Image (cartoon, rainbow, N blue to C red; front, side, top):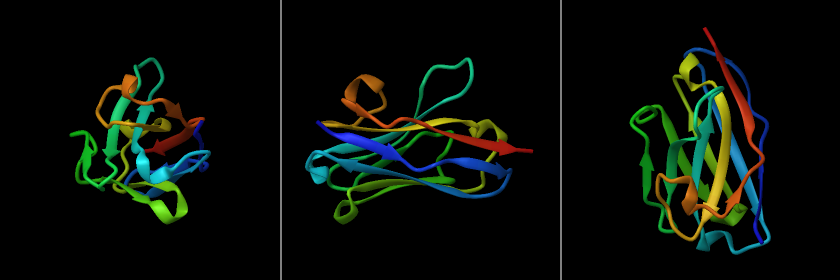
Length: 121
């Protein structure tokens, strides 16, 4: 059983930056694919980025060039570096882990608790 604990998000002005982290315990971190999703009020949970066991990454078009997912296996942590934030990025952000990576929430067995990111104009 894997537990994922996310860092606190925050309130950021448009154009600003924020780094989210998600620390894992209870499993072999390097064996898992990892992802970030987000959910804005009234919307479905949306794929943001994933990173494979080997370090291959994919980012959603909406965040490509602004967000970067990374992992540090020595620290059992996955990160989401968010730059040039926009008000449309406002959402609850969730990290996720699973045996495979992809854009569907159904691929992931374990989820973080979610953290609020608010981007003001």
